[in-house]
Image 1: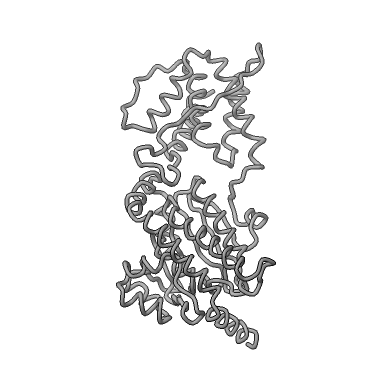
Image 2: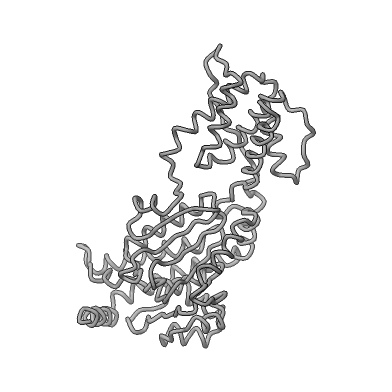
Length: 405
């Protein structure tokens, strides 16, 4: 094996270790995924030893691996590679603050006096074990893969960005019960994957037209009361996933936004909007009450008077107005919206992921308990509203007018 090939392999593994796993929701920053437990390998049968040619082929196969095997496996591969080429660890231990190199040194040093031949064989075996599992991996690399998993949204992960697209364009991306459930699942997966940031946007001309009011028309066998109870539980769970999301969450508002799609914007870290977007929360018109923690977050963001206009009196904001009161971070011309926003997002995706997660935790942790309390209270209030004659009459009136259009 040439020295250049060895250098390439080490650099490949070294680069992929520069992005340690982020801490799960609720983990303290002092425990921030800087511990890398090593995987245990089943050694090959006695007497079987991989040749140098097998070892080099394994390195070539590793370059074809499309799915990230995780830091534990990458550390083991690194250690076995070093042991196979140089023997037992013979370099000084890096300092405590050099987290990545210390993890790599610990992995190599843990192999002790393992012979170079055995290390070479274990390396070949480990690479072989990774290849068959690749097709069945749950990681999604493009939107076409996601279509077989989701019905109402598209999810893709590329260049350190997980993108969740609301995908009911003919219905202006109205959120059905199915879409609520699928967004929850997508957020859970995005929180655990190797992406650095997560982006939510809509397909077509609308960002989202809010709650699909046909949800109210489909009364379950348990009656309206059961429907209201189930709806409140689903909504509370949905909003909780935004409150608890551990990494930067960015809304790319590509068009008009209504209802729940507006109220949860206060739980995003950044909101970018096209200049043709509008923001509308017509709760009073439908006999309902605010949700998405907006009754607490909106007054903090824009002041009580502006929040009252929007949440009580149904004032629709333009993108510029939403930006001026702090609901939107920045507004872009519609013609250049996608180009400008995604150029910026791609830059964000190259920032250190653990640093971003820890910083977000510091910014948000003091409010989490309060937000969960507000979310619970809002959902209880909404459950009562949904059971009221006022709300049911307003919704039925809306559906009747809609059917005549």
